[in-house]
Image (cartoon, rainbow over all chains, first blue to last red; front, side, top):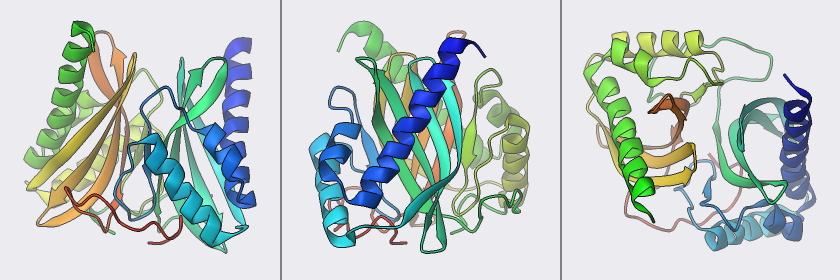
Length: 140
Length: 140
């Protein structure tokens, strides 16, 4: 781990937290700024088909933030994977005591980390519970 | 779109299909080769906690492939996002008429595309049905 990587990792985790803060605060302008307009983007809300277009993704967040109001969503146990100019953050999302599992992808764009991927889905696991038997790829 | 990108895109889609072929054929040796041993990896089976370690991920596939035998899993509507040395493929998985939605991540490692991310989860959507109302981030 060199200093550059360490600084980058900090920046990415801050970007990831900013995403959840925008969500929590219902802050659509910040949410718009989070997402890349230069690179391909992909957003999969739990149970829903993929959105692969910036405008569609922002529209979905507008719907969510309008309907949800301020949401007590927390990001727990973020785990960062850095691949030079690309990064993935795997984390739990806690909403009213329920947990989801999410992957957020970021790309370095003009010196700031922009979101290019968000996929969240249900999980039977919870943070700090390490092992669950994997029986099948297609268990719900 | 230049020629290099076009060739890379073809290579990535082939790697993505190889992943599903390994799954379908219950081919653990091929599955082992698919995943990167050099870069950080993340695998989220539907409903399960994240696996963030190569050995854990391979163990989970061993369990799945042993229990499933040959599975008639198909990858439908793959959509590729290329970010230089990193790529994401968003696709549907069809298993016995049921659909999941998945994101697969690949990195260019020593001239071949290795898997670093697999996240699959349930979806109410199906391929070629474009729009579903997004009501909330935390709908299952």
